[in-house]
Every structure is written in structure tokens, then in C-alpha cells.
Image (cartoon, rainbow, N blue to C red; front, side):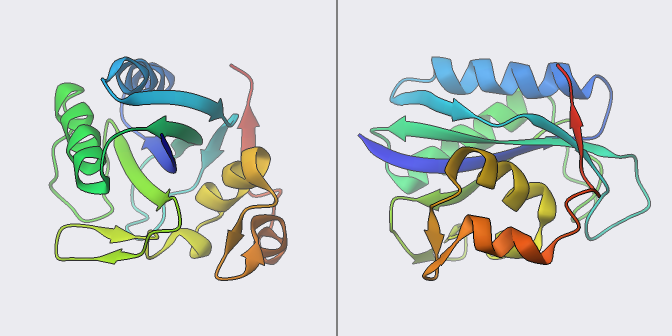
Length: 159
């Protein structure tokens, strides 16, 4: 089994329900087991900012899937929950992104690992730090990376 980190986000409708439904689908998917789950965080939109607040979290999974098979799973879950892609970084019922997959580096038209914007996003790095503070990205621990963010900008949500 290999380890991978995923980021999940939602900003349409019942955000918590979409996130928890995605987690159930992930954990029920053949070849995936959820190991750790961060808290939920309410966050401001990134990129396209004229939209509702997001709820985000990060999960650590064990998987027997390849990175591309995991991407297929993530996209399947998004489709199952009704995601429609209209605007880049726009509103969505669910978003499931692969952040890291073992120590692999992949750069294809369809898949980039590590996720290219992860270290610029507080809503990814702060939940990631909660479950993997000693994890290193480009030789720097997640705990060190998050020092550049205003950690009060994210609101931890009590489930």
C-alpha cells in the first residue's frame, strides 16, 4: 500500500454533507483506506474570489491504486456528487485533489504531483499540517511552510 494526501473542498449547498459523502465514497472505494482526517476549515475562495466561502479538509489515505487510477477515483467521486466545471477555481459542490503520492513527481497534461499550488494555499497547508506536520515538501517541513500564512484566517469548524 502507498500513501497519498488528498485535499477536499466544497462551497455550494450543504458543504459538510458533500465533504462527508466524498469521504465515505473514498473509504468505500476498492484499493483505498482513509488513515487520517484533518478538521474541517472554513476558508475564503482562492483564484476566483466572487463566490461563497469554502469548507476544506485534508485526508491521508493508503492505496493500492496508481496515481492515475487515484485521479480517476477522485473524478468519479466528483461526478457522483454532481460537480459541474464551469469556471476555473469557481464554485463547486465538491473538489477532490491529489496533493502528494508517496515521493512521486508526475507532470503530464492530465496529472501533476505534487499539486502545483499546494504550498501557496493556506486551506491546504494548515489542514495538512494538522495531520502531517513533519512531512517534507521540497526538503521543508509542512510545519515550517505554514509559518508564512495568517493562521487566524482559517476558521476551524466544529463538526
